[in-house]
Length: 155
Image (cartoon, rainbow, N blue to C red; front, side, top):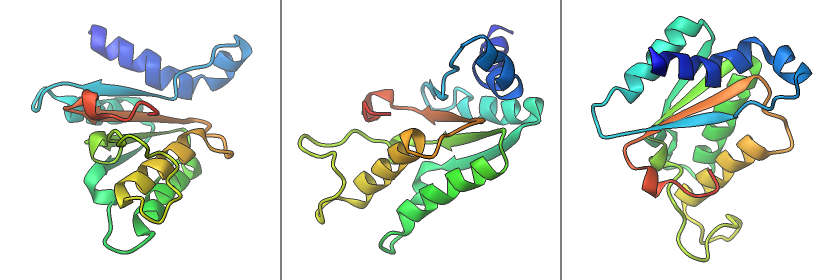
């Protein structure tokens, strides 16, 4: 199907044929965002991708990353990416990405203030992992949401 081919081209091919992409000077996308109303099979599509591609697949529900303990939520994000790098080539699937990647309020964004919320610090950690000093090689991010309008523009 058309969807299957598009998913293979955007996710599988860059991971399975990284050297060809590099040789041709093609910089593949770091990830994709799937969105649609509840029940339209976003999660099922991601699971099918994992099964068919035979790539290492880490599935995370956004709300599961939050902890009541200070610093543990950010550590959980770092751990997801550490595992993904360790088992690369891999796909990290964030279900309900809007729970952790929601748009910040006006004036927020540094994430360094003591008044910053856990949600903001988790988003900052996620952005750091995606664009940080340590390259995210052979790891592709797939995220799903019912509300793309709530996703922070930086993502």
